[in-house]
Image (tube, rainbow, N blue to C red; front, side, top):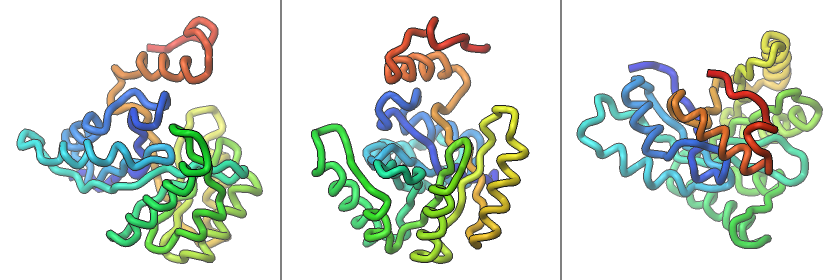
Length: 220
């Protein structure tokens, strides 16, 4: 099997942010030979159930390890953090954390602050997901999590293909070394196969309130 494990796959349960279902990812990961697949939806663990059920499909050529987690999105300017529980107790804490955020607002939304994660972080493996141009907020979040959960925190590194990837990766590498939290490679996939790109474009336009024409060209 492929030693690479994707830890930050967003599914259709990240409302209007993904063009693929959890079961699509599991099948794709199986045929790609990935060693593990992390489902990490936006302030939600809803996609994990379908992903787990798909693992029982006898037609899968390989069965990847399922990493059940969530992508925590905060209101206070902190970068997103992907978390995966180590054990059942940590899973319970993650669910309570998300419930806390949902109880603060109307149905369908979730309001979390970075301090909430620090209070409920025991047993969670955390990957800080830097924005396109990481700054002071990314450094502060990484430092705080590393201090609270040393040995269980990583800095996510992807390749946005925006022309400055080498410079951005160098900055992330320097930040990770300075704080002592290792880099962790992720693709942050929004869909499981290239043919889902048109659907992804459509749901993105709906979320942004734009037409396809106004958003720009879809390269093939």
